[in-house]
Image (cartoon, rainbow, N blue to C red; front, side):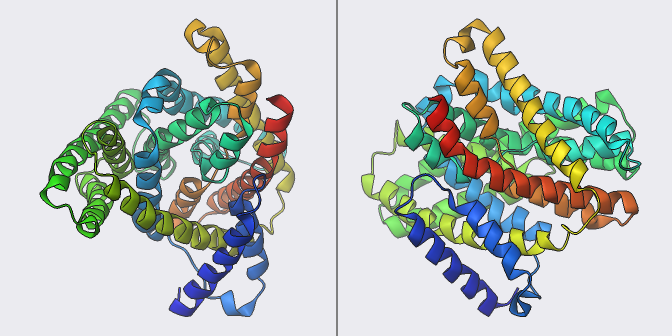
Length: 394
């Protein structure tokens, strides 16, 4: 992607974000995606492409780090039980149940293998609340819903990528289906990423006191965000979880040891610019790139899968929060509905879709088109629907 195109995309993003400053009920990302689909038909943007490496190694570490260090540790601790369940066991349940449903409903439409159906489910499992958290905080009386949605998203990205990688290996016939091996790989990749994140986060919190120059401290935060990610990936563990937990440690330190107000202000100033710049480019490019995959014959199946993903998520969240007494007191049925609706798909799902381009077959092409369609429906419909649903339920 050329420099001129990047500048134009940033300018479009600036215009949309500037206009949205006066709007509280309509998130920016779905608007950017719709504009991106329109840009697909403009010849100037014909050379735009996005690779999985660009999303995974450049965009994702920054977005994850920003969300993690800004997420109050006290809120994470307060809702740790619900967040941990949804990001681990809940995510695995989502893949299994949704995968089974996709396999069953696809039979009248296409010949889809069971592993292919599980692959689609794993792509549609990670949530990306970046476009709805601010709306939730303004719509709800307290931040419980926004905290649960954001906390779950921080942790389930790593879980989803590990599950997807295992299922993709089975789909591409590079590894066999072994529950023991799956659990072993899952624990190694997940716990290894967490450990590296905790160590790097702690080292950063110690190093921050060697200088009081805010510019150098911000530079150190860049090293923390990307360094923890790439070192974890080098050792074959989750870079996503490493960056997330490095940010969580920093959030904890802000509440305990780091009392330098100027550092927090400098950090927010720098990463705030990075965040809106990445979001502008990312969601515009998602629209441009996905448009080419939206001309296919199985839109009916894609709509059914989108509805099924909402229902399965609702059943898992409602079932867990209403059946467990401690959670039942915190989360009402109406709040469960809103948490379910707010789990829309985004950058991680797009990265997983692009990861499928390693091979070429009719089934892979169908999976890519279907998942692109479902992700776009999720981004647009769920984002736009959050505000009116919140006003109606809360």
